[in-house]
Every structure is written in structure tokens, then in C-alpha cells.
Length: 494
Image 1 (cartoon, one colour):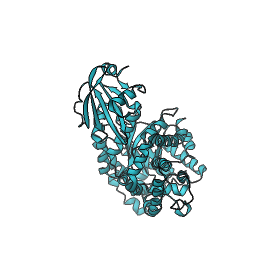
Image 2 (tube, helix red, strand yellow):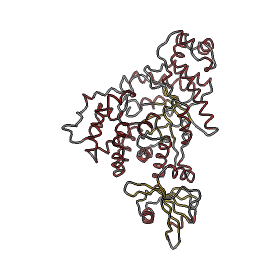
Image 3 (cartoon, rainbow, N blue to C red):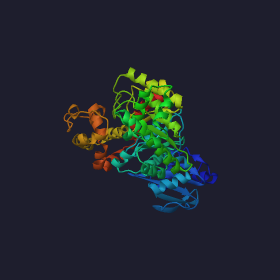
Image 4 (tube, one colour):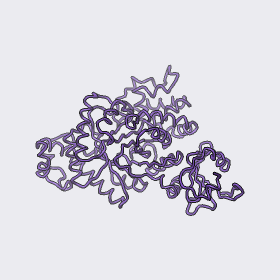
């Protein structure tokens, strides 16, 4: 089918355009991503690249109405007919315009399907994530836009940047099976408002600062019972048929203020969304002590009583979930712990168990999927960034060596807000003396964690250089991401 015939037919949906892509490229004088070519409402939309710059191009019979200012607009002759070719910058205004024309570029809610959060600190990894998810032999719901407010501050990104970057990746690859956007580890209502404005659909509440691991009886009586819409006596009576009073009181002291905070956040979010569908995850994983099964049961019961609805909950499991490395601990103990949490989730749900700091925890994935079945959410974050550094190491060894030196210099400071145990003395020295292939550094425990937690410092210094290297070698970058995520998803997709 010719270009004009596609316009005349107003064909809906994605065009299989490997053959047509060179024709589009000749018109736009740029490389065209074939899977991006989309016909909708009498216009053709596609993504182009010239050197390091990507643009949206729209080909139509007339200039687009209510579109952002075009970088350029010209008439071109195709099959003897005059068409308008408009080129737009890849920015927030263009992303919003494109979503209005192609609704599948907007995040959606995902329900109780097995899901995976694909954290992307650079905003360049979505095509690689898509390639990995496409290999799954069963349906899995991806969250391509995911970043915590803490990470956004360190990467100088906004909630809108994160959503838009994922949408551009989705458009580039022609992904039409839906994706979520996770406003991760939210702690304040102001954070909620910023993410609502950006179009997020999934909200992870992190009440960790309200968790109290030190029990005494006075604390139990002094809890914010008014906010909990309960009383010390009512709370005991509510759960006395399952647990003794000491267990109940300890659970309330530890998590009572967290439950109150989550309830406030949930009600604020519901009002802010004003009827627009949304989903919530409750996260209590970033705490010192594991969540007991009794504590999980009581937290879930209280949230249900207070009208909070959630699709996934992240308890603090036994063992160590450190950043960027496999699970550290006894697998039999983890299996027993996970089984108990699965049972609680079945009683109060169903809802998904969420595995936070889930990157690279390959040894526990088979256990989780065997016990929880489809009711699992895997949350990854910095592992995509580490794979980006692998690509950098392959194509610009000098840049990678500078990055690694910076990680050595700043690790002691940057590790403060992360659960890691890397020892710089056990990692290759800061100058990588005797290391002929820097890529091997990404597989060394201590070096890997150092690079993981120093991302903010590294990007502040080398963001432009890293992005240049990745865009110049983007197919290799996507392949690194795909290979790594296929390994992550093997237990969940097959």
C-alpha cells in the first residue's frame, strides 16, 4: 500500500512499514523507526533520528490543528499529491499532543496481572524493556515509567519527564499492549499532586519513616487512634481471635502510624484523581526488621477497614535485598517467609506481593512464582542503569574509567540512603589497574554496588557523555537491556 493510499483509507493502527520506512526517511531526510509509523485519523505519525536528535514527524493533507509549534513545516509531493510534512521537537508539549492523537501512549491501570516495574534512570531504556517483554510466552503487564521522587531529584528529572520518556520509547517500538506508570516511593501529598498532573496510574506509598521498631506499652496507648478511627480496646478485640494481645500491640506500635499515613495519602490521591482510575501499592520494605506474618495480617486488615484499596503490597522479607546483587540469605528461610505472606495476601486479597529491590534477585524468582502464582509484582530500578554503563564500557572505556573513579570517590557519601554492603577495598582499584576490559567490572559485587548507588553523582558529571554514547550505540544498548531483562523475566513469563 502506498503512502497516499494509507492516508486515503484512514487505516487505523500500526503499519508494518519496514518496506515503507525508507520512503518516509527520504521525505524527512532522516532515519525512520519502522515500528513507530502509525496511521490515525487521516495522518501518518513516525519518529525520526538525525545524529543524536529524535523528532516526531506528521504527514497529512493539511496542517495539524491544535498542535504545538513545529520546528519546520513544508509541502512535499507524494505520488503526485501535495502533503504537509510537519516536524516537532521531542519535548513535553509534543508528547502531550501525540498522546491526544494516539491514546495507547498514555499509561493505564494494569489490575492483578503479573507485572514488572522497569526502572529507567536515564529515560532511554524502554525499547530494550519492550524487546524483553515481547519474548514472554505469557501475558505480563509492564510498567515502563517508574522512578522514585528521590531518584528524580538525583537525576534532575521530573515526574513528567519520566512518563514522557517512556511514551517516546513505546511510540518508537509501536507497543500497543498497554503499560503502567509507577510514582514510586511517595512520601508526601505534594509528591502525589506532581505525579497526578503528569498522568501516573500506579502510586507506591512508602510510609517507612512512620514505622517504629521499638515497642513499649505506652506507645500503644499514644497512637493516633482518632486518625485510625479506632481505640486501643477496639484494636485488641478486632484481632484477638487470631493473636494474643502482645502480638497485636507490637504490630500496632510498629505499623500503626504507617497505616494512618497511608490512609491519608490514599484519600488525598482519590480526591486528586477525581474519578480517574488508579492503583496503589503499599510498601513497608525499607525497614530494619522483617515484617512478620501477623504484622502483615494486621496492616492489611486495618487498611481494608479504613477503606484503602491496593493491588500490591511489599513486606520486608527475611534476608537481605541489597541493591544490584542477588538475594543474600537462607533460601529455605525465605521460602517459608514468602509462603506465609502469600497466605495473608490470599486471605485479605487477592493482591500481588511486591518484590522491592527486586533487581538481580535471580535465586528467589522461582520460589516467588511457585508460591504466589500470578499475583506478583517485580520492581526493578538501577539494574537498567548498570546495563547502560555496560554499553558505555564497551564503546568508551575512557569515559567508563572516569565514571568508576568518581564512584570510588563518592561511595562513602552516596551509600547513606541505600541498603548495600560493598567494600571499596574488595573492588578493583579506582584506576582499574590491569583491567583490560572494563565491562567485567559490572559483574563484580562491590564495584557493581558502588556504581549503582553513585548514579546521581555520576550523572551530574557525565550525563551528556553517557547519553551521547548510548544514543550513538542504541541498538547495542537495547540488546544489553533485553538480555538482562529476559533473565529477570524468565521465571515470571514462562
